[in-house]
Image 1 (spheres, rainbow, N blue to C red):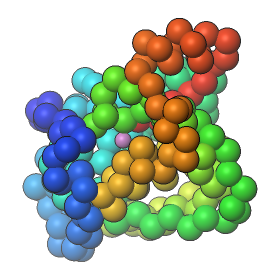
Image 2 (image 1 turned 180 degrees about the vertical axis):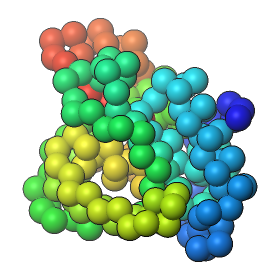
Image 3 (image 1 turned 60 degrees about the horizontal axis):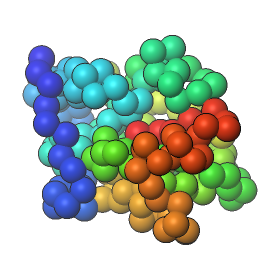
Length: 185
Ligand code: NI
């Protein structure tokens, strides 16, 4: 296992549509090693999600984990470490709500993004078994943020009001002081 470098906004891989994993690849040692590295990288960075393109591997694979140790994001539902292979997301309800998002590939910044708050996710597990999740609220936002990485999108692309992009220190000073606001990575 190894901590990988997280590439940052400006690196072309973050703007590339990632390719699906084949059935043979899903169970392969190479992908198992990539997932181990991604887990170690996520834990090292202290985020709640990481997509393979963020470690410069342009494949449709992401991990998400929300634990008590990431409670700095506020009062958010827990989500055990889960690996999503070739995920697809379906919006079940267009009603949107906004969260202050952050991204390990856009370090130091927070931006307010409104997204649909009820989605269904279908993916494969590392054992190539089907996964299906119905997600609402903050979790719906987290999954949309992570899976956007697989399509070469960053949260800033989704912002409607550029005045709501700011440095973390100023966010803490002027916005978060009065409220507990979760922020997906
Ligand atoms: Ni991100």
